Image (cartoon, rainbow, N blue to C red; front, side, top):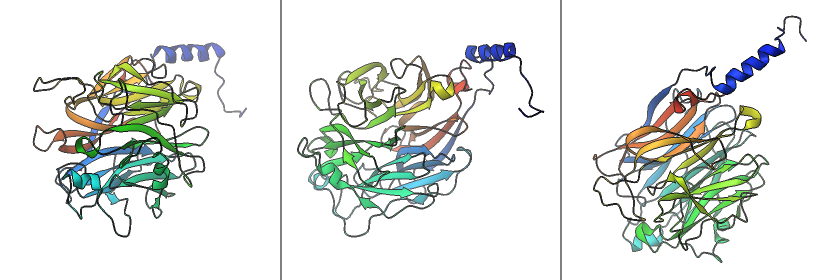
Length: 415
């Protein structure tokens, strides 16, 4: 021991541990602040939608989204953009375009058949990033909901490798589901503690509404740091009480299993959950979670802490916590108003969610969660409406920075 190192009596250590466990030494003052990162109608785009976010091991925050030339829907001219923060989300660099595939491109026939787009429009969609412990940021994105590409950054998202097409991975689904539309995420993927990269995906025949329905949910994964990708088992089938599983978030549980949390259009209006020991195969029978409402919208999950390193197991979940409609026309399996985006906290690996707090009372839709290197909680989400009434015409993409003390009303704090 160094001569200047103070010696703390064991009794004092025990007293400190007791105070921490009781939440008496919360430490930080409850904090919530919001920063708009993208605004509709600015910098040549009508809308910015579909937020995603990751934090690198060095602490760089990457926030990415779809930049849409029109506000007609998902099938027009869409580019993908990224902003970077080196100080935990307090300040941000300029936007940068992050995806581009050279060569000729053809519109997805299902979109043309339903008159959802015009020939010549180019749709890049559904960016999904993974920040792994090796310092590489992996990014998957789609083109025309028909092709999937992989690229990577080794300099904190400043530059990216040439995109490599991995659509052949999705072709492996065809014996089980003859898809015409594919999509990754949206949001972020995960790197398992053993190194496997897992990206939730959904695929559709494109014959139903908006050429996105019906659909089933699964994953693709890589065991060699993104060099090759494989398909997983179908985790969310479109059958029985499970109607049109699609946009899915994933988290690794404390015991190593992977939990998928799926959006559906089921009459239950609850999130649909399933687990797998390896994050790819032998998914359990999906179950609805009574506490996790489903207005039919993207949601997000992220791990805040493990008991082994953070004192307690903590998971976070975000989505619009609402099942009402302003017009009063609620019906089973039909969309509810996207408002009241909230963040929930679980201490028992998603069995229960005793803490819930509203981030945005008004219009608020898609969201993605991350945790800054200093433990600050981050939520990148859609809020507002360009016309004050249409839920799909997002006004802003906003970053909320808040701490565990704010989320729990001062009852919990990270060690």
